[in-house]
Image 1 (cartoon, rainbow, N blue to C red):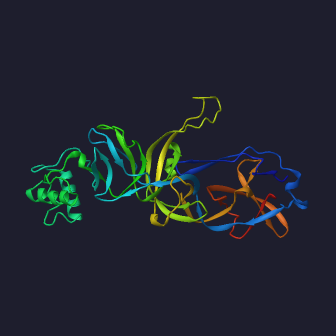
Image 2 (cartoon, one colour; image 1 turned 180 degrees about the horizontal axis):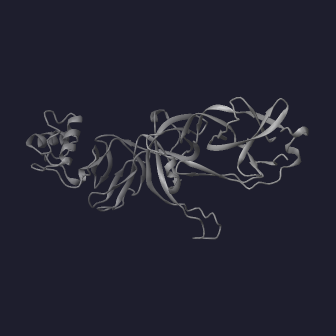
Length: 364
């Protein structure tokens, strides 16, 4: 007697779980409906067995933003008398804010401004200062690889101070400069004109000026996103751009959605990690900040494999899975081994399968 097969469609629970790079499929067979077969046992529709590359990529929802968010704290006491507006882009030597009428200017560097700089001081912060003075045209002749605050450095500082019409002391106070990695964008003002932020209190939130995309993944599934892998990003309006995963694993906190609906604390809070995507051509992206986007992850790719639509799978009553091959007006069941799932298809192997064969699928 011929084995009875059950379509794995809406009437079946098909669960795909990534585990160590493999995939498991669990199904609960149910009786097929009378409309799923034509007279003579032929399926209502067919699709070809295809050979080609199969990707396990997935789509996730993300947010368009800016790179390298950070807080800028006040370097000293006083009253905030001016602050750059939200959305403003500030470049080297530009004003970020003023305290008691004295500007705090942006300079480029990775070491924070943690002390006043004067003759005899040594360190990476001195190197940074020299590089900035040179870039601004005030440090001709300085050696930026020499981390010593020399007499020549003091002269360059005086030129810089003269350009801004402030006392030419030859020294840089801690509250004169804020170092950052490059041009900055004011995301948010954390203090308003007239406030007294005081030392260590945030004045503003800055980001880099380059556009990036951020999204969150369950920590257990973060292995699907690998640094350096290419992605596609669908922007508002339907435009698609490309990028690469820049970082994986920034803390994003637990999932605060109360999926169980049981009130505060009753939901399923899952640990999340943040994934940051660097866009290949960020300057060409002009969608508003915090716009929702869709990110296509490439995932694993199998080369030159046979695949069929997922809904062509049959759960065989004797165990395992198969497809219904249609040839010469007749249908026969062929048992298959399942491989990777991706984009609505599944990798299949079996001695009786060949590229171009037609397999049955239920009527949609």
